[in-house]
Length: 181
Image 1 (cartoon, helix red, strand yellow):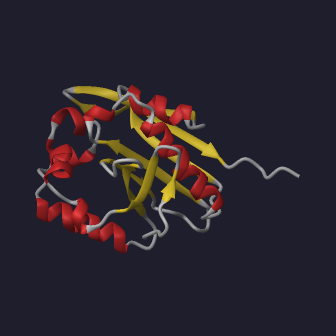
Image 2: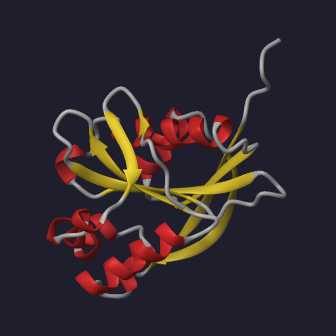
């Protein structure tokens, strides 16, 4: 799926990734252990070719929206956010996010991107519920989702093997608020 115009928040622009966005900087995020620690992509080495193919397949998808997170002022690409797969029957979708540029960690960009995408999902796509799953040690993501209005809905004990130790999976959700009036 692709969108135009982009989704905008106070500091960010979320837009469909273009060929120009897929460069060494983006590729380095996926191959750096500290950044990909909680991403499933860590199990396979990424190349420029595999990354271009991945982005193209998501841009062509009928049920997944994959967007780059860009700073409004400078246009710097700092991460990505994904909505999908979208279930039209159940009106729900999963959100996943990575802020790959470590210089922008801890500044509230993930919360802002999640909130902007959630607003779009609820108003623009008429979804009812959004979900997210994460490793229990991924406290940064957990806090970002909680600040964006998600609540913890459950835990999957010893669900993920990470760094030689088992971690619980945390399940989060956010339901669209009823319209006033």
